[in-house]
Image 1: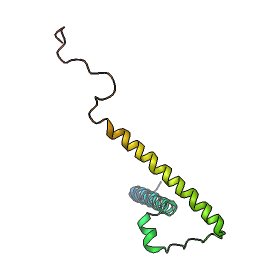
Image 2: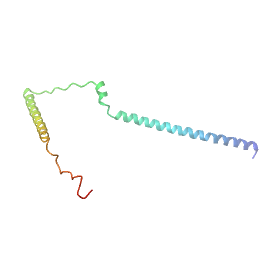
Image 3: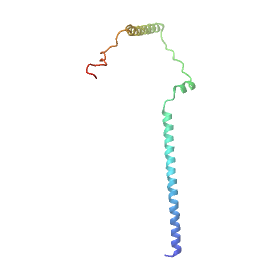
Image 4: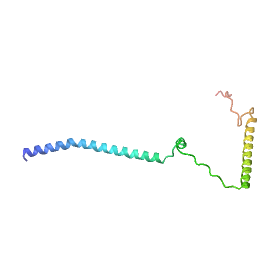
Length: 123
């Protein structure tokens, strides 16, 4: 082989070897960029799916007015009486619970008494 051709081949090979690390770095950079883009897209998608905080909803959204029920006066009175009875029963249950817990303030705590700290065996 002629020296001219050998020099050409060597030059080409050296150039290719120099470009190799550059190409590798470039490809790695592309891979990182695409991974970052995928992660950002996933974050954006999950944020869109996640429920918004209550404060954000209250400030921006207008509350819908309550729908008025079409009830006859008799039915309305019947429902009112049922609700009053329910509330009275609930108040009575709460009062019983408070009364039971407040009466035994000075009584000892329930359950077995703890063993004495200085036992006869010296432990």
